[in-house]
Image (cartoon, rainbow, N blue to C red; front, side):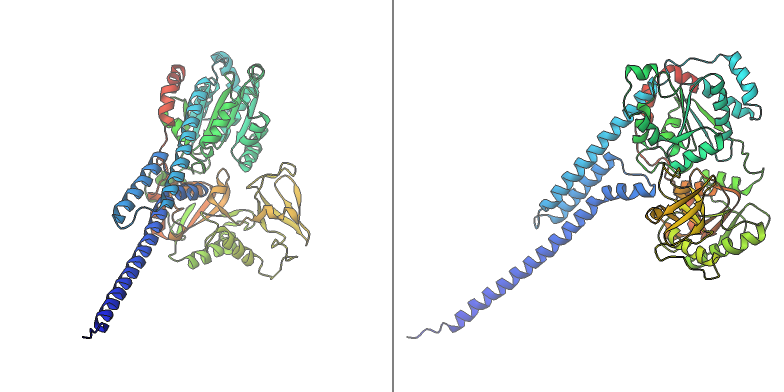
Length: 551
């Protein structure tokens, strides 16, 4: 009897084939799911680090360490739940979480230690500072404060005898004049004063307006050796008084280093406007110091830079309060602040170039090379500094004059910015000058005080300066300011950025762009967003003697 195995074999082969295909499909599905899951995990886990790393150079705030850890744990839990029994969380994500958590905890510990050091250090500053009696102080003020307003005079009296104090106020309210009066009083009393600022340009400007030597905080720290005080330091301190201008730009770690060089026999005076851009680094130190209520604060309110009814001042106050300003359009009424509406980037660019090269020179007599400054949030893009500088240079040099060499793009008359502190040449980051002479091997730049020759090697420290980032402009003033504002600048657009740009203008400010972008900037405030503990630590640490004077 013959048995036919062919149908059985065919059925078995068919079953095996179907099983293999099903297994292959399952494996492909698992592989795709694993890839997708890993991407989702890494994308989510990268958020806290990226938000901090990308945010710092843009001047944005960062997530607190606690928020970062919580966000990481939430992401991992969600990914584990979605994978279920099909796929375990990849080992790589576990490693990523451990690295992320470790890095975040390290940063959190460093911030907590720095805040504690700042609070403890401030509490010890000026404990042995001699007080200038009221009769002698009144005598000093007779010669030093003749032209001061009542609130400026009150500010001087408060700060002269306070171990640590803060002078604040909007641009144009007379902070510089108050500093000069303080310098006169301290000089008459025989006190040695050091002036410092966070950036080279801010230090240079402080030196120019006060006539007193000034330096960057970093350079002062270098001279002090960045050491804690020895017994000799206690006898001969670095100075009797340290005055720091543009203090809103000082981050937590720089403040920690500054406090370390201040002894109990020194006074510390911080000067700044918390409504301007916060520090690029971690923390909101000046804001926390003021909000703590335990440090004496003198706030100047009267504006001396613009006349009463100035639309620049009105717009700045409106923005500071979180309301949308409504400057007139050119031709509607006479004003020192205008808004020109334009919806797309190319139209905004065209209007900017027209304003720089034709409108403002013709109507206001502004010199396009010296008087007009374009301030923009970004470097890249159609409305960034790089593109705008190129287009403005081309428009100003209509004759078709080409750069003398392919090695650089500078022409005689060009407005330029120095981008690096150079103490040998005595030029600083953000300092503005004008090209006097350009050859294939060098250019000669005329700054306010002197002419400096840049060799081909040093040309990398120069960029065109018709358009500048708003961050770089902080601490400077310009006769005419043009501000492009468009949705493409998000997420850089915020209230503090717009306020800082607007208050750089002395005679006139022109905003060109979209009203939607204007509203976007005003409603997006970065102030209060950083989660810090410095305020609470100051309240617990500062002695009652300062609390009384602050009240």
